Length: 237
Image (cartoon, rainbow, N blue to C red; front, side, top):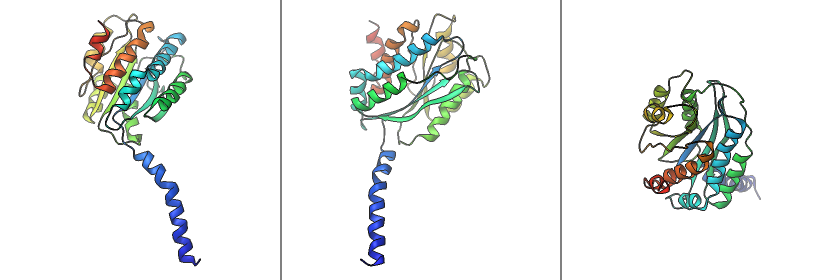
């Protein structure tokens, strides 16, 4: 075999290794979803665990998996962010593609085993939105829908301003949905409605306390993934 033929053969072998990886990286998804979870001082260890377990349990739910598979691309991408004070934001799980039962269960297991990096700090929702918005710059999957979910039990206590960060995200075509956990702060539902959520088809899903968080998360994911505005209403009947 002459040198020219060896070079062509080697190039073909390299391309055969690279192309599957490139194809996976460029595979489209129906939704890119940032799950931003409150880890501030007001959230106890057990309450933080209820948030993660609620997300993991929802991802294992057959209805959620069916909703994911029913989309045009048959897949979504999820990343998990923990947040507290302005300099206490952590990318706990990078962008992960979910397309079937196996991948949903793998991600659920990762979320269940995610450690809590912060044990104290304020409630910097504005910083959480800013950090979450930046994660879309790292998104390896093409998508037409980008959503940030913010769950928490209090209003913003630090700069940057929540509404400013919300409006900056909306300007980039990002939707922000909220899951306020009631019981610790009066008027939190209205605060989230007026200051936090925004963008195309944005909505609020309420958890009346931490014990009801898993059910609220399930309703929210079904509504987001399936884009069915009746899910929340029907579940509350």
